[in-house]
Image (cartoon, rainbow over all chains, first blue to last red):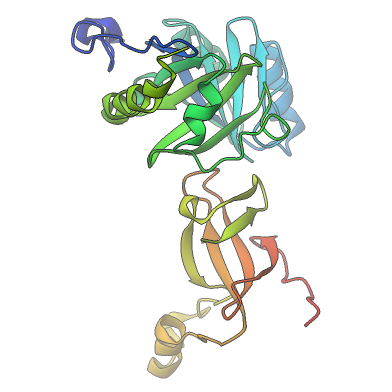
Length: 195
Length: 93
């Protein structure tokens, strides 16, 4: 496999100085997060059992929820689609184990680690900033830690995952949109620079 | 702006969806023996009603699933939403 770090990440500090530090919110890139798209039928006992055996936890079958265990997470993306995320460089091993375990089943495992980068947004103002450009209902009554959703932020396609009640969010965005979205976030956060 | 209840993800803004035209149009079983008129009817003729309309939508920027919507083209009220392959639910007028 190609060394992902050799070209730098989409928001590499060398080419894009990190300026996402404000009084009540900070954001940073989490580069090279391992991402796998896992497809299979949630109606098939076999598929769910095999996935659980490899991952160590059950795939979430409730729409727009996330199952987390250590450095592994599975995000529900669709009724037959999940994204498995893990620490950089670990994805190849997990992909291989999933592939081997799912032989003979109607399922697919695809490494999409380079397809998106992750921006982590944390702090009391994080929700307000996202609400400026996202059509989702992010009210804590509706969108809570452990929830995820595919939607748009400032017209860029994103996967949003709420980590905790700080609130902390992980934002998955295509590399070609990463700088645009970063610039949009810096601008949207400007008013929170003064505590 | 419509607020469309995706049968998988729940209510989302219209900007997340793509429109797929009139629903329940079956492709002729045997194109070789289908007359030109019937083929043209399948390809081009659509209802365009003033009132209740059954149509297809896709949650393009969400779960990417196709589904059916019954919508009133006058009031924009969404009467019901049902998954692909399901029969259209009986809806009171």
